Length: 260
Ligand SMILES: CC(C)(COP(=O)(O)OP(=O)(O)OC[C@H]1O[C@@H](n2cnc3c(N)ncnc32)[C@H](O)[C@@H]1OP(=O)(O)O)[C@@H](O)C(=O)NCCC(=O)NCCS
Image 1 (cartoon, helix red, strand yellow):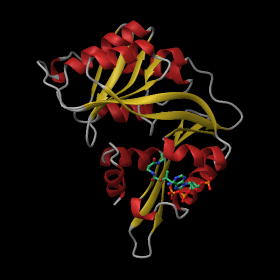
Image 2 (image 1 turned 90 degrees about the horizontal axis):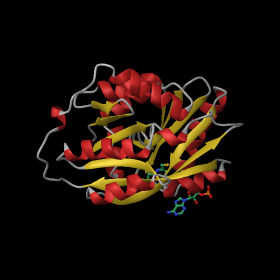
Image 3 (image 1 turned 90 degrees about the vertical axis):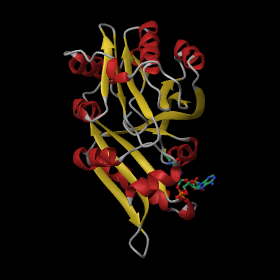
Image 4 (image 1 turned 60 degrees about the horizontal axis):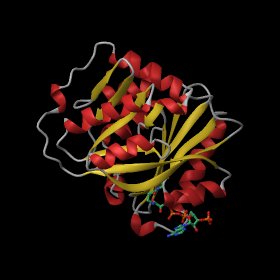
C-alpha cells in the first residue's frame, strides 16, 4: 500500500527503499477509515546528530485536508524526541509546509532526467573496484559531515546496483521504479565528477535520474550535452541549532531527496 502512494505521485522509490526506512528508521502513516494508507512519512537517523525526513506523500484524492501537515508533524516530533537536527530536501509542493514549521533553506538542487537512450555499452561492463565502497563512504562522510555507511551499504548492495569510480571520484548507480538513479556522486573536483557522470550515462540505456546541486555548473552543461533535461527543483532545508560541518564542494549529486 505504501508503494501505491509512490506510484500515484510518479516517484522512483521501490519496495527496497521502504524496507530501508523500516529497518534503519521509522515510517509513519495516516489511514483512511477503511484501513487504506492515505499519507506517509519517514524519519531516517543519519550519523550521531542528524535525521532525514522524507517520503511525505499524500494520496492525490486526499490532498488539501491536513494529512500532509499531520504526518509531517509526527515525523518532526520524532526527530525532536531523538534530539537530532532535522534535514530534508523539499519539493516545491512541500516547501511551504516546512517553512511554516521553521525550516530554513540551505541550497537548491535540480532533478535531471534522460529518457531511454541507445547505448553501445552496458553498466555491467564497468569495473567495480575492490576498494569502491570504502572510498565512496569516506568521500560521502566528508561531503555531508556525517557517517551514513549503513544507508550507502544498502543502496550499493542491491541487485542491479553498481559503485563506479576511480581515485578522485565515486558514485552509486541503482535501480528505481521508473528510472536508474545516479547518486551520490562524490569527487574532489568537478571535472572528475563530470567524467564519471559521462561514464555512467554512456553505459546506461534505461531512463536515468540524477539530483545535482544548482552550484555545479559544469555538471549542468554536461547533463545537457548528454541529453538530460531539468525536471524540477528541490531545496535542502534544516531545522535545529546547526547542520554538521560539511564539504559541499565534494558533493556533485545527492543520493536522492529521500536520503540526502
Ligand atoms: C505536499 C503534500 C504532502 C501536502 O499534503 P496535503 O495533505 O495536501 O497538505 P495539507 O492539507 O496538510 O496542507 C499543508 C500546507 O500546504 C498547503 N497546501 C495544500 N495544498 C496546496 C496547494 N494545492 N497549493 C498550495 N498550497 C497547498 C496548505 O494550505 C498548508 O499550508 P499552511 O501550512 O501554510 O497552512 C502533498 O501535496 C503531496 O503529497 N504532494 C506530492 C508529493 C510531495 O511533493 N511531497 C512533498 C515532499 S518534500
